[in-house]
Length: 113
Ligand SMILES: [Zn+2]
Image (tube, rainbow, N blue to C red; front, side, top):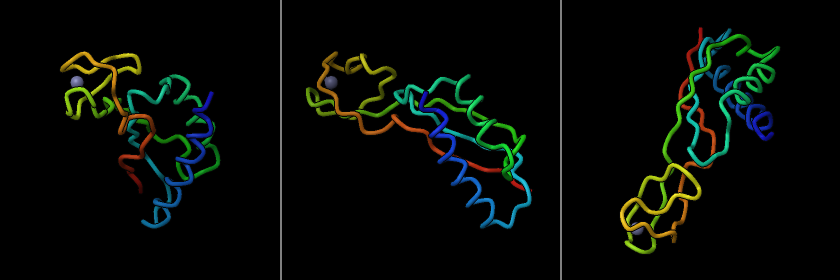
């Protein structure tokens, strides 16, 4: 389960940003999950809750957004959206894809008070 380590590093970023804004508390967090990151929503929510304990973000709302991944297709020389690792190019059906994004977790937005 890699969700917990992702959450711990995301939490560092959240606290850093919250402090920069002089926030006393983080009330909501928006995370963007790449479709190819293999992150499970339930595991992520659970890990986030434990990682946020005793931080400014304890008890905050967590909004999750899955984003399709982007890949470069060598066969038809196009940048395409892919949903799964084993999916081919939606244009030509080829599998010569180089994944460009969508394998990670990103902090999108914070709401603080
Ligand atoms: Zn293609």
